[in-house]
Image 1 (cartoon, helix red, strand yellow):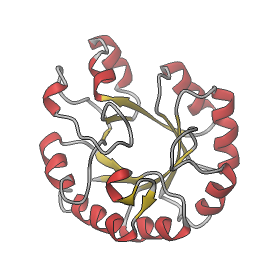
Image 2: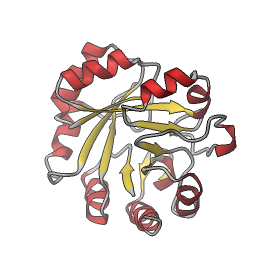
Image 3: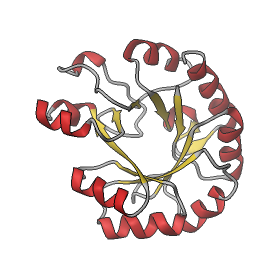
Image 4: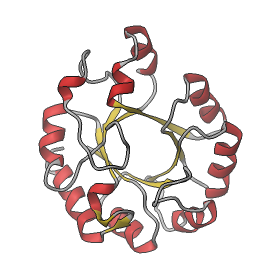
Length: 204
């Protein structure tokens, strides 16, 4: 089970995630989120992350030249596009030397045609709730064609209490959490991070 802890802002929470066995940690660079940090802080935090753990920069409907500039300054390994970005945008990310991840809300993924879903199978994708970061889950029944083929992450409303059951039911390649390991909005809790990773690992 691939486990990503997103929206980290401090050295202590990064250490908690890495120490508990996270496969990836995420830094938010999209404006307006309480979890947004600077590229400089992300680079500083990323220097403590061992090789083999992905550092992910999360962007939402930002110009691609801005995305790539911030990703380089932040020294992340991976760019996550969490808006309306296209396969061509993903190709730009790959061409710039980054790994890539594309997030869809469950509704947005559902609205894709069969051919479009097949086109996205070659990319790593993430399925999130309608409002990312709001701590709301979605029902697998809304996915009219079932869950994606290929590598995909389940997100949206996950927490230490429900991640094992959700992963068992939907069988993603991995899980992603942000608000589900927070003591208050935007504030990560080190013990909740550890609890989430342990719960997710029990399902792997």
